Length: 109
Image (cartoon, rainbow, N blue to C red; front, side, top):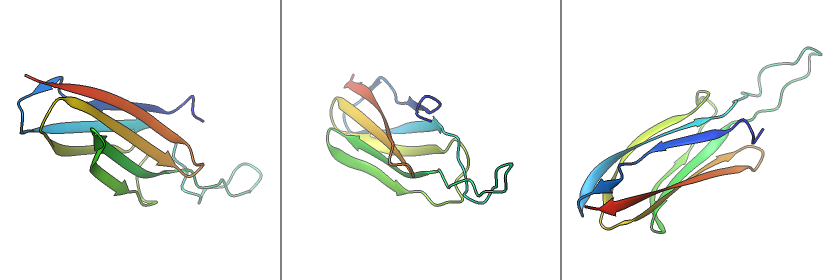
């Protein structure tokens, strides 16, 4: 499955010190509710993104517990204050124990 998963993140390249920015994330992930059955009548195991986190320079910005009602390709939009130049680290966790990670740097300008 990991070949199908593609995280996308939008973070401005620069911000003023102390500025609040908007961050947008989307991850392409084939979600399974655990309620569908395959052609043989067997239940397809649940496979969802169950947690999303974002850190900036090692400090937690957001930590979301995702519930089973989440849609395919979960989208998150949130604000963050940028006190200094640094790096955002985004992580998505799924039911298989896979972790999908991407990073974005931001400069003070």
